Amino acid sequence: MIGSDNKGTGTLETLTTTLIDSVNGYRDAAQNAEGTRFQELFRRNADERSRIVEELRSEITRLGGNAPDDGSFLGATHQRFLDLKAAVTGRDDKAIINEVERGEDYLKEKFEAALNATDAAPETRTIIERAYQSVRQGHDQISSLKHGLEA
Image 1 (cartoon, rainbow, N blue to C red):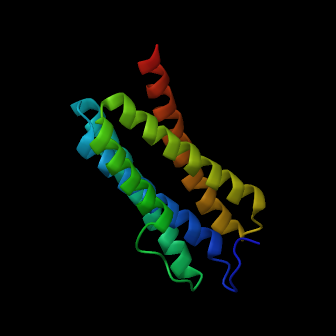
Image 2: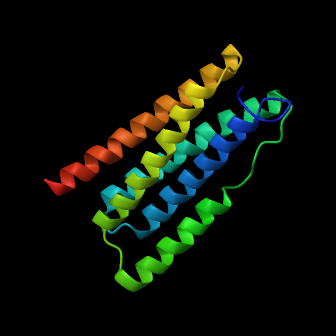
C-alpha cells in the first residue's frame, strides 16, 4: 500500500517532506559554499528538487490528501546540528559536499524503499518513478563530485 492513510497519500507526503528537506539543504549548501561553481550547482539542484516537490504536491492534492508545506522535524534538527558543527569547525567546500552526499544517500534510499513497497495506482507510481530518476541523477552527480575531490 502506498500509504497508511485511507487516501493512499502517506508515502507521497513522506517523500515530499524529505524532498523539501533536500531543497533546504541545497539552499544552505549554496549559501555556505566557497566556490561559485558549487554555489551554482547547489542552486540548480535546489530548483530541480523544488520542481519535483510541486509534482508530488499536485499528486497528493489530486488524490484528496493534504500536501506538506515544509520539511520534517528531523531535517530541521539535522540542519541545526550542521550549523553548530560549522560554528565549531568551520565549513569548506569539501565538508559541505560530504554533507550533501549524506543527504543524497538518505533521499535515494527513501525513494527506493517507496518504490519497492508501493502498490500505487499506475499514474501515481509513474510520478514517483519520475521523481526517483531526478533524485538518482542528483545523487550520482554529487557522489561523482565528492569522489573527484578526493582523487
